[in-house]
Length: 106
Image 1 (cartoon, helix red, strand yellow):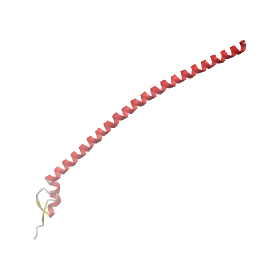
Image 2: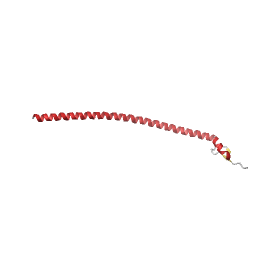
Image 3: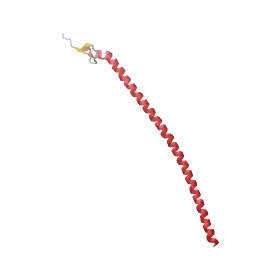
Image 4: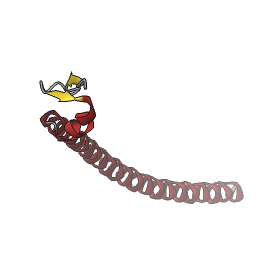
């Protein structure tokens, strides 16, 4: 009977029989390290995503505040324009009346 022996594919240094390869890989200390690394990478990725989302939220709040300020300014400008148009209309009426008086007085 010939035993087929090989090094651990995860390179932990263990010599294993080929028929026990799958069992060893599941229990290999290197597999635990890989799982920890994968979890650490996933956690880091989530932290980065969380930070990016928080930055995006902050920017959206700033855009909302600026939009509110812009709309407020626009409403004020509209009110001022309405007032100016009323004044222009009143002045035009006064000038028209003045012209009629001057023409009628002659």
